[in-house]
Length: 119
Image (cartoon, rainbow, N blue to C red):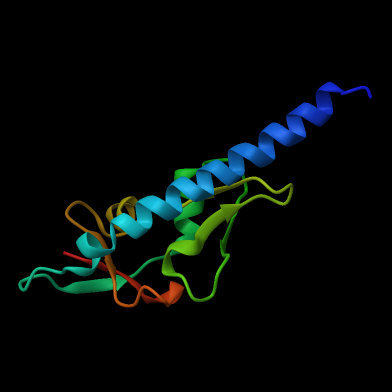
């Protein structure tokens, strides 16, 4: 059986994508307590534009913001038509969208659309 370079590239891309998704998922799960604990003096200042986050965090790649699991707030990914995907840094998205000091707040870990930005 011959293995071609293009076959190895395809396998490597899929493996990298799976490792990145798993890493983001685990990091997201570990951050639940931190992100959901909003200080008493903090105020929600708005929602998170996940498509904007994909564009800013992956410039020039043309990735689309997608939810991969409708019951998991940590399932947001920036996805390319060819299958490549990467997680979204929601804290960075808030800071970019609302300026310094803004950070991500999660209202419901089972709802991908419950992300908000606070300050």
